[in-house]
Image 1 (cartoon, rainbow, N blue to C red):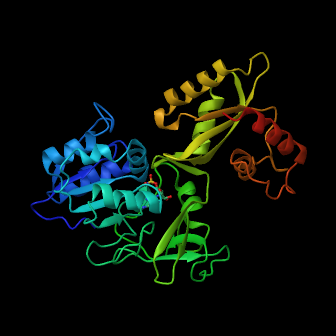
Image 2: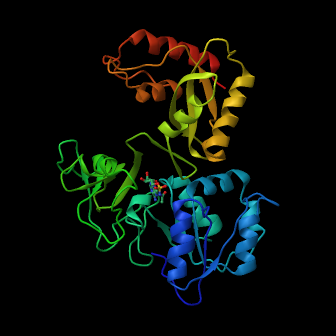
Length: 357
Ligand code: 7RM
């Protein structure tokens, strides 16, 4: 994937505490005897050229980073990379979420000087290694596509009934044959392992991602189809953030969704029902945001908190996050016929439009 040679200086900018860091700062490159840069710090400290200063100083040849970082660099402006000699770079990588073509082009031009291939690498914690990626110099890239499966990996895109979808039709991304680094279980919860990955289709690994394949067989990832949200390439579960919120004494109930965010890809929006005796004010919003950051980590801190008296639920009590997403993104409401009380969502929509930050 990274075409590693003895002379290369490889730098994966991920946080070592997240899976890309474990796999592509620690196990992978060290097992392969790579010469690596290992860095901990912020990309804007002491200044917004931190990455480019490091590339120049250590003559980095292979740089592996994330779309969210690239979007932040785009926003800061090309003057920061331009201050440095980036001519050592020969290969760029991207991981963590779909890279939007605009960010791809900017990365290619302003970091890669128009000469470096970009490997857009799709994989998951559960896959243990990169699964869909161009091979540099072999597979022609298309901005925004992770291109083709790595040799020996067999992905497919299926509909709800398990039938392959047609060209350019969206569906569920699955892997149909085993591969060396696949997850073999969930610690202490074998039931959940079967439920999450092996019960949608018989004998086929379910990724939880949507995708389509174009006329050249290239894969285009379409994001998650479950309650996983992707903030700056970091995977978070809506449930986990909801639990952190409910853990606060003021909170009776909470529903968390991912909403479109220009830099982070997705941001966290929380709809919160508070208990009697608490005041739904700005101070409480800030306190709840702090509480989540303290319980889970800064990456999970909600961008928006909305107080509400009710949440849209089905008759079986499942929160309809799809409707909350419609509300948060200002879209017309989708199908509400399965709601226990359709009035709740209309009231919420009106209230939300008043509260928007
Ligand atoms: C490596 C990592 C996995 C989820 C995965 C996708 C998304 C990751 C890409 C991507 C489109 C990519 N592991 N994802 N890489 N989507 N193109 N190149 O992020 O377990 O934390 O997350 O991330 O939704 O299912 S992870």
